[in-house]
Length: 217
Image (cartoon, rainbow, N blue to C red; front, side, top):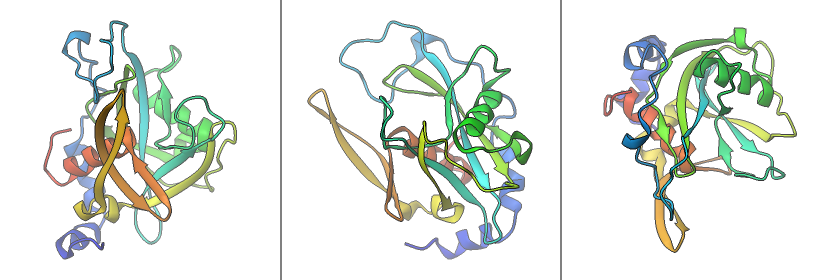
């Protein structure tokens, strides 16, 4: 489904990228207290361990035909979430200065994205998962000086989705999955044979809502 005419007009100029810093948080947000967190799905047993801080990079890639959003397909050999679509990202290491440093480091390790090619635009509120990860989404504009190259130990392939498609509400459906005998649903986006679902799709939809003025960062 194509984007609505008014949306196409919005995206015909770089104004949306220019406005993003005003829509997003200007600094990595403080991580909320453990007792205030509600996971995206409730695990069978209550989580008592401290959450694991993580960060992902929502990379808005500057292309001649317009901006795109970068996704990776995880290696089928990984123990966790093998073969699934994800943003570049991972745990925040003790050596990382902040969430942005972690997200950029992971993007370099996973797809060879150079830090100097990225311009941080802002941050979204942390997202708490049922697997006890507290993810800070970092939004950046990227002008790649060279092609992205997947690290075969972590990433099977890299693909990009036009930003206009991400911002079109008609692009989204629902993905349903059973966990522990209960059915859960997430957002879903299909693009050229790839199915984006779960945490990645939920974060993508949150980004959509922020840009379209339907939610705060």
